[in-house]
Amino acid sequence: MKKVFSIIALGAMTLSLSSFDTNTTVDAEFFSCQSDAQAFGEFMHNHNGRSGAYWALQFYTTFCQHQQ
Amino acid sequence: MGTAILYYFLSTSAIINTVTAHLLGSFHFHIFSVMKLLKNFLLLFLFNFSSAQEGSVQYRNDAELDLYFQEIKDNDSIKWERVKEFGNLKLKIDKSIRHKLFFKNEKAIFKPILNENDEYLLKLSKDKSGHFYKDNAENYFFVNKRFKNFNVQLAPIEWEITSDSKQILGYECLKAYGNKNNEGTHKSFSRIEAWFTNEIELSHGPYGINGLPGLILEAHKGSYHFYAEDLKIELQESISKPTTGEIINEFNFNKLMQSSVKQ
Image (cartoon, rainbow over all chains, first blue to last red; front, side):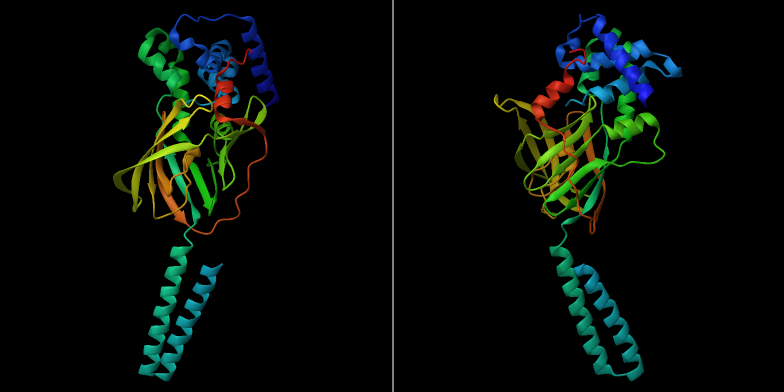
């Protein structure tokens, strides 16, 4: 668990140093956390044999909230 | 407790009367026994009817893709190809979580059903989905996000009850539409549809959707659709409040959770 959250924290720090495509309307600030989750998933893709979607959902579950 | 006592007297009186009647073989004794049994049944029925204020409801969630993914799917096919695995995985997890609402008079708590065999991601999702607690004084959502506990004070729902009705699990239900208004601006940020039964006069429901004059057995809010699968009227243990966290209102919490982690 500590290792997992260390990786998540590392990913969050990495996100803070990188830039992302914000051309589409759905990348508005309203969905920033979800975008972060997607970016984290792409960064972590295939880590420990897990897909990017797995890591994105783990990030999302920890940092974001389901929006209605 | 009262039900247990009545059951005891009912069963013992039935046994004693049957055995005695058999031994004495008296017709008049049988009539007396039947009248006494009928009286006990009537008392038992009235007691159960008046005290049907404890129990549990199990709900399933026929979730759809949430707003973020649906907008991408509808408007950006290239980006959808990148995010669809994430979106579909989230949807699969959302649909697989069953919840239970435990209620005991004015208190209720809504939380996911945990299973020992849940794989890690499902277990994490259930753990982070939070608990909704309500009593006469409080109505909040307790959750741990970003390594912090929050007590999210739920905005009240303004309801409009319609005359549409249908049966759910054998209970006659009415439809109602609800709106949650943002504090300060009075702008609605959540549109809700719910079906509730007057037969259980408790203002509880799933996912923080409550405040109607009866128990809610079906509720729709955004991409979440809760359907009651099982309802049990039975004695409940006392319902405890979830652990205290940082107090925050619903609008500010949603805004915080939507914001980038980079901030």
